[in-house]
Length: 148
Image 1 (cartoon, rainbow, N blue to C red):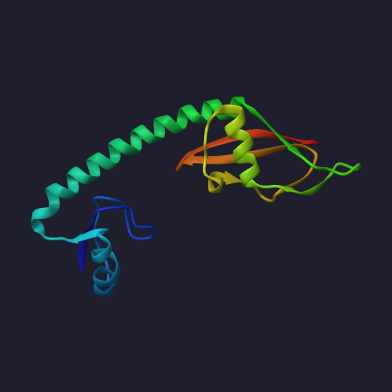
Image 2: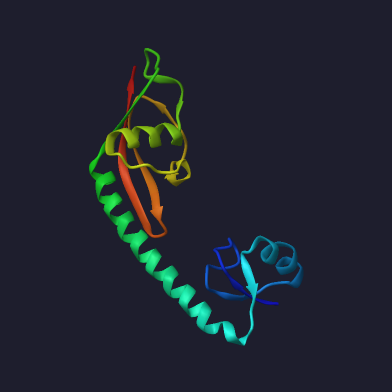
C-alpha cells in the first residue's frame, strides 16, 4: 500500500515521502496515528510541498547546529564530582552530568542522548566527548572532571 508520510517515521521515511508499506502497518499504525495518508496520483504536488518545507526546516536547523558546534567546541566543560584520594570517583560522570555542565558553561541545552561517550568517566582528569547536534554535525569538546 502506498502512503504519503505526514511526519518522520523511523525506519520508514521522512515527512513528504511517498513510500510502499504493508497494508496492516498502514491500517493499524500509520493511518490511525495521523502519521500518513493513503497516497493517490493527485498527492504528488502535496508531497513536493511537504518535502520543500522539510528541506527548508532542515537547512535552518543545520545552520543553527553549526553555530552551536562552534560555541561548544570553544568551551571547556568542568564537572565537579566526589572523588577519593587516589583520583577515582565515587560513582561516575554520566551524559546527564555533562549536559547540565554544558548548559551552565554555554547556555546551550542538549538532550542527553546527543552526548556520545564510550563509557562513563570514572576518574578525575580530562576527557574528550562528542555531541551529535544534527545528522552530519558533531561537536567535540573537552570535559574536565575535578574533585569536590
